[in-house]
Length: 167
Image (cartoon, rainbow, N blue to C red; front, top):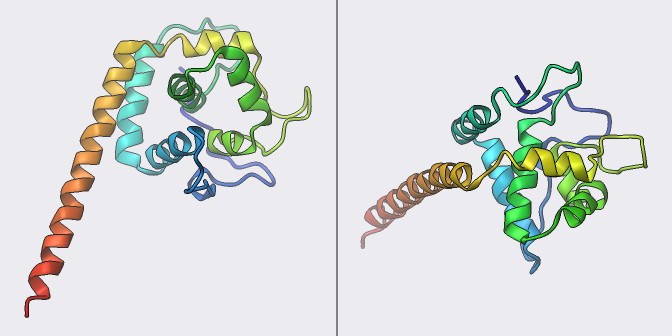
């Protein structure tokens, strides 16, 4: 069975919840990474999503003695690929050289050739293939339901504030 993510931080690594993602960027990547960061930092959401991924990936890794890619990495790479509509070469470039992407993946900030955690294009392609359209629909439904709950809570807070400020 694959691990969900590596909870042990390495020297100089920033916790995923504390990664500073630009809010005013016009690029497509920061909002996607911010959503993934929110998923990671919300245990009830991430638990449901990891269960979906575990079910999808279960029994796919042969017992070769090597660790498979973490489920968190598979999720991040799969979602980024779909959101940016990019090919595997660009995804490999992003995972190796984009500092923000590496931080959200829980990797060290820099990639130095064979040192540090890196992924080859073939590894990325094979692991992302586990995330099919059905899996994306299930994950999307979980995120949408959580968003609706968040919206309900915010609307209730606003309503309470309005009721307390009557003149």
